Picture 1 (cartoon, rainbow, N blue to C red):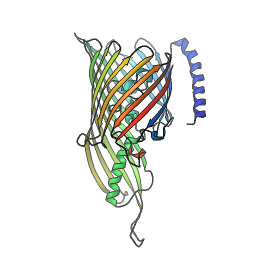
Picture 2 (cartoon, rainbow, N blue to C red):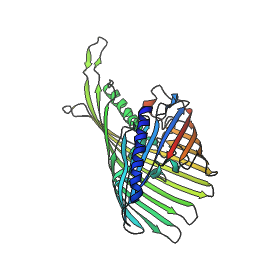
Picture 3 (tube, one colour):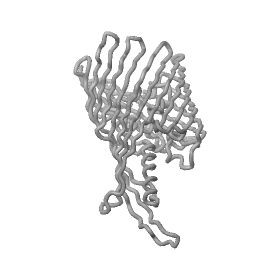
Picture 4 (cartoon, rainbow, N blue to C red):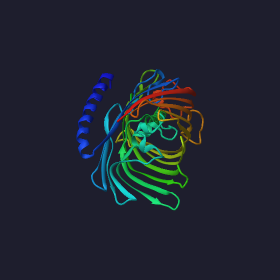
Length: 415
């Protein structure tokens, strides 16, 4: 979206919000949202977008509506338009939309496109004003996987269990979601395609057509609000069943006399990708400080089935299993209502059995946030990074540098 088109979009959005707000003022309809513009610049290695040359392809517009219909039933929905490299492309979509029915003071259920409990902060990652940093720590909250762990189309049940010391929050969500065209997914399929090319002794033509869906997923959360004031400890489990299909068009192979020894053909690839992700978390708030840490283990299994044509039948089938690991420790200091600082150290390994720098990413991140007003926030963030385990291969066809920096800036208006 060009700058002028985006300005017109925001003006129309502002007029719409003003009109709806007049109506909402009469019937207690709550309207909130944000508009943000960011900038990414990396010393080496394109990250999420073509950041080596600097990129403003980092925007978000969020609008949500909520209304309490009676003592037990609340409804709401959120529209999201975002652009981050090849993700989003400023398409407006429903981020979540559900009815929330309170069975009693301790438990309730939600039906619709419900938010997914994942770690401590996944539910709030679209609310930029609630966090100090530009990005949530990517060693646990991988930005490329954001789009299909935001919400499930299904339902959830939640409740609070009081204890003599503190209480326990419980939640279980079930459903499926759309599977967008994402960078790390393309990387995974690209590695599989390279293996297929080696088996066929030829190369495929152009960018393959890819489609996918996420079905039958569930997420569960348990969180203990301890008797120690400000301390909570918890864990989540996320399980997904992802299915991909793609079509590869292969070129014919010629010998030295330019005589074709293998004709061109089309092959269909079907991949079933099943991650089960466990996250353990803690957060402790004391005076002006917040201390937090999380550990993630993602156990994945990828089954693939390849055919050259319906008449030739199966050519190749197999399975690959591995475990990804990630963790971070973070300290946040809120000096006053205007100034906030964050420092975290995170580490990620795409395969815990192979921890070389191509498969790992160690990230030290320092952030300064300045609240211009209660509605305006400016953020400046720098990452000192060792490794490229979270870097998209398809954005870096000329290779990688092991040690690099990433500068991220962001301005957000919240309403």
